[in-house]
Length: 41
Image (cartoon, rainbow, N blue to C red; front, side, top):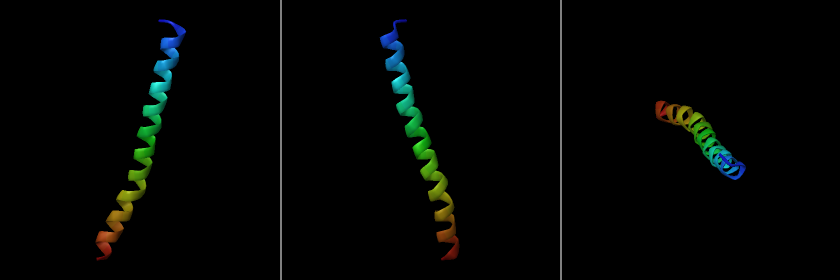
């Protein structure tokens, strides 16, 4: 495997890793907020 292919693969993996943790973090905030909101009503 060439260096260019490896670098491109690592960048792609980094993008998807960032996206995964972004979504996970948002859900970590949204789900408890939604539970609190609906249990209060």
